[in-house]
Image 1: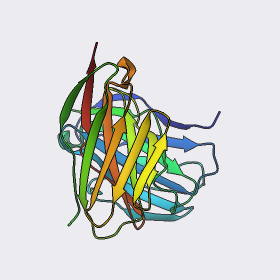
Image 2 (image 1 turned 180 degrees about the horizontal axis):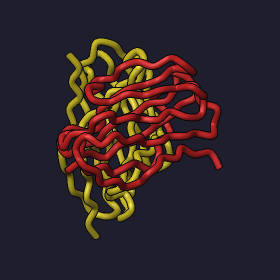
Image 3 (image 1 turned 45 degrees about the vertical axis):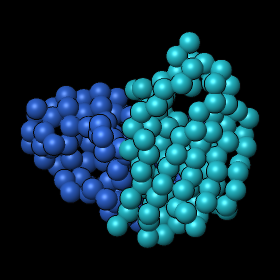
Length: 114
Length: 108
């Protein structure tokens, strides 16, 4: 089954404790992206990757890192989480950057930083 | 700057027709996309417009006017399961920029 998976689905952590949210897709998609979704602000892009070893900042990259060592995986790293990073996070992928409008989204990761 | 506007909330009755509007001002434009998102779930792609006009897809249709920076999503024969948020998004160069979404509640 074609899908985007994220882990963990739920995470409660404390300020400053490094964490990684994994994202994997099995569709051989070139383009992958991370979003955060907050009430009243909608989906905002954090980082995106157009292919292996190619990553770029989105609209809200501060406090986040990503890597794209393999085509299928695109982990999101929070080196020193803070309470303002409490949010719902979605990973998404599309076949190419030209087809970014038709993205497949993962199920989401609800992160709480205390 | 980039700006995408949609109404925050709408209500409608089962069996009715509802139109959700979206206006945009973006530095680039490669297409306008509509997503559906049920509460607590991931967004799913619904439809898109690249050229002006109406695109029909079953009970859902989407319209685009590039000169006016305007789109709408039309939902016909509303069902209870259509209660969800509808996200308007503009494809701008390498990114998809989302509006804040319209929460639609369908009542019996």
